[in-house]
Image (spheres, rainbow, N blue to C red):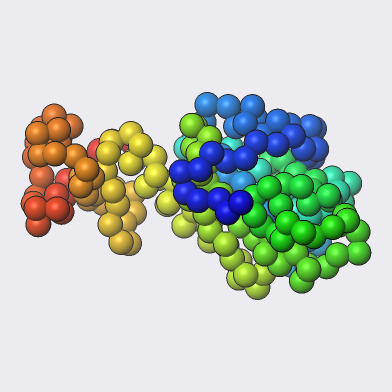
Length: 220
């Protein structure tokens, strides 16, 4: 089954570098980012895991838990963590899911469901579609999905920017325009009537068009 935005993120139980987890229980009442990798000991993914570790405080400020996944056993993740610390200056400070049976990758549509066996003997090229980011809200629904090719490292500052936008929408019923960054003006959701918008934004708005009502960004 293909996952869509607003679908409930599939729940699962898995071994990680921080012990066994039940995914929905692990998320709790906050937000989560699940980002996947085709193989341990690959260069682009090594830089990504180091970058996310350095940004952990930024995710924490947003009440976002981060969890990685690679189609390898936990023992390989633990060995890879030493390489990440050596080359990137910091070891992963978040859990990595061991998905050597590819159960989670299949559950999330990241790899063909008819793939058989385990990760043993498979290469990064075999698993190249396992390069997805899922942002999951407190209601356990999928808020954002991004899929990257193996050779393109992910921009986690952009992912943080997108999370800021998603959280503003949930809290204040606003949308963010192109190139928006924290502190810029935002747009009242078109689904709000003027009457409802007046209660939320008593200082009013700039009606560029009837469907484009621009307001100052509410305090997060």
